[in-house]
Amino acid sequence: MQKKIVFMGTPEFSVQTLEVLFKSNYKVECVYTQPPKKSFRGQKVKASPIEIIAKKFNLNIRNPIKLDNKDYKYLKSIKPFIVIVVAYGQIIPKNFLELSEMGFLNIHASLLPKWRGAAPIQRSIMNQDEETGISFMKIEEGLDEGPYLKQIKIKIDNQTTSKVLSEKLSKIGAENILECLSLIENGEAKFIKQNASKATYAKKINKKESKINWKDSAKNILSKINGLNPSPGAWFEYGGLRYKVWKAVISDQSGKAGEIIDEKLTIACKEKSLRIIEIQKEGKNKMLTKDFLLGIKISLGDKVS
Image (cartoon, rainbow, N blue to C red; front, side):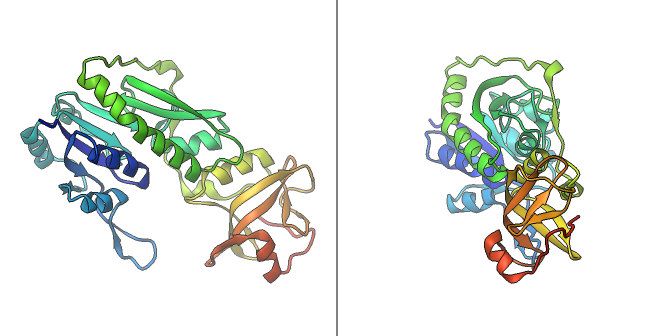
């Protein structure tokens, strides 16, 4: 008899794991995801990536605004073997944790106890960490404080964006979930307690953080650009308009912070400078800087802010 699994997830990051579970010998009894939200443009209601794939697989979908007594009674009635959580977007109430035989297993995108919380991928890049990874951890009452069963490390370089890192970590999570479930099912799982003294927290990204401060070093600004790609995107102002920077490289050229110092759109920072490779003008599509410069006149010495 197939063991029942409940899956909780919302963004694209969660999709590969659900696909693996659906094709496995486990029975995905139900999928929990965040309710549809209005899109930024046009205000059309948009289902989450998990809801879209769950419908494709004809799975039972539940998307409450907040987990409540109805969900408690439902989970209690189906008696799942385990609940798998991957970027669900809600805190699991403490009393829910007793509702499955083997508890709740969370796939978290950091090497816990580092970067507990909402934005571990972005924070690891913005902090210029040299490595990060995936933690398979048992959910307990505190925020990402539970013991972990397995961790897998991955390197980060100065061109790694949140988009690229998210895709890599999502794949790693999906590739290893069945091994973790097998260990749990066979009574071979050994969970390791986190060292709370080494805990750091990845607070949710605030859009106010996305404005570039050219008085910072080129290295720090590049980390911000990479960490905030694809959302919300790092930006600066020039000529009263906002420009998002999607890709840049560090240059050894120097000048006054915020000053355009060559015709290739290299902008001076506190230390060194950044050559913009891919840019997006407010209200327009992103494009390579070399193409962007064909349609705009810039002058050396102009200031951006």
